Length: 259
Image (cartoon, rainbow, N blue to C red; front, side, top):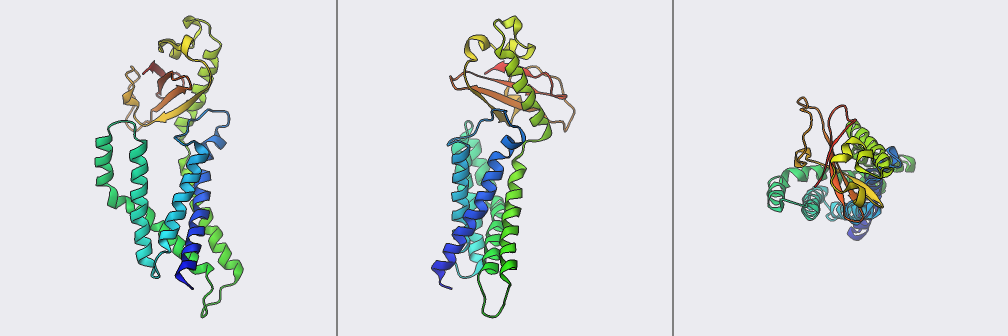
């Protein structure tokens, strides 16, 4: 087979696998929690899914770039670590110096997250491309491709928020619905009474962003036992108003404050 045809097949395989992963990872939380307004990074959920698919397509192309499989697989690992490092750095909102140092430190270890993808692309290629000295029934060839697609798509499902976070998001939406009916601070749910400017500013559409560091919110909250998870929910309105809430076990009444 000509090298150009091999690369085209690698591109198609990468795009196909990427589409499965992108759809699963970007939409699984919406499927599990319908009606919960979850925020999405720029350029939106569909945009991120398309961008993810394109990146996987590029990685598939690189995996098939060389005649020998090992150089292509290693090239995929390097490119995957480099591209995702750029994305993480571009989407970081604070402490860019620390983020850059962390990405530089883990650049080589992160390569090995993408090496298996390169191997999978080459394995599917080897199964799909006919060999003169090895006859594989068409059904088995396409079954291999479908197995790879299913495996990568299932990996995307790991983007589902944990049980505690899902419970906190559901409770946060209930609190917001209750707060929307209030006309004075006294009528607000107790957690929202500590959010300055909620009554005049909490207007219009909003979305929930799951934060990674609950200690960033300067609120008093119960001391949790070691290993227990706290959910940090940031509520962002389209008009620019925002506040944060930390849910500690049992994830019912959060500690909220504007920030």
